Length: 374
Image 1 (cartoon, one colour):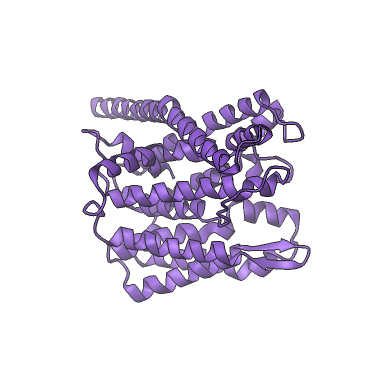
Image 2 (image 1 turned 90 degrees about the vertical axis):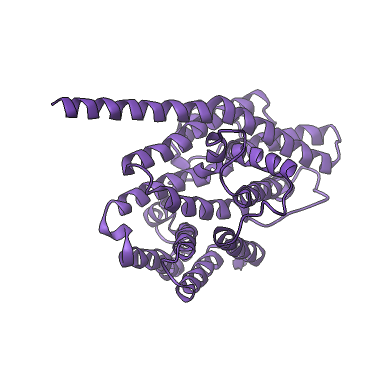
């Protein structure tokens, strides 16, 4: 997801250099996340709210954003030094996340809703440290959308470590990909059979049940660059789809229940991402006026993703208490998330990324000058 905003910072003439098709897919994914949260999860988590008149019940957008992140990790990892690549990803991800946590925390306390989670300063610290990634039952999310951030931090770090070795290249990376898909599938029966707390903490903490999303992103890149053929890619894709199907089984009092709607939606999304990577740009079918707006939203989409959910629920609940129509409540959540996401991008994400990258480059230049002088 850090790649979600790089279009905005690479502009020299106000227009993105990236294919507009990627901005369309990225924008669509974030909008689907917002619709899922605003129309379905809002009343699921807070049943006292008025039911929505329009409901999108499929959990699809965030998963596909991880696929896209993995794909662009492959695209960019060979540019410049490996350490600069890793630092750039951290500089893109971490500062806006920290800023979003603080903003959501302050809003939750300022506009507290009676009966809802009221975070303490201890909760603020645990969220800044992402402790919910390891023990979600002990450390509550300030914003549930943040679950993707530690997975991406680990994913980009693993990518850098692999790329630095022989296991990140050639045939060895294929072996790594297959293991990353098959091992979670093999251990799935254990994961759903009430394992020990230590097992659940480690396995869920490192996101084993979501590794297939990173794998399919890498596989798409390998196929689009003709490093693997269509039959091999198809095999990997089917395995990743199987991993997604198993992931979407939920434990209920009646036993395991499959969410086939979300599974099918994510699997179709994988195909869309693959076709986007291999196909021509969509600039011939998307008018310039619309392309500019799509690219603008894609440029702030990481910020939107980080701040829209919890604050949006508060906005919707306040409007619900006033008797506002549920459809207008949904629109208010979408608009609020977009405005706050734009502000987070402008005030935190872009300035902090620029500062951290300039600091890294200055330090590198200083070290190089000392080395040459010596």
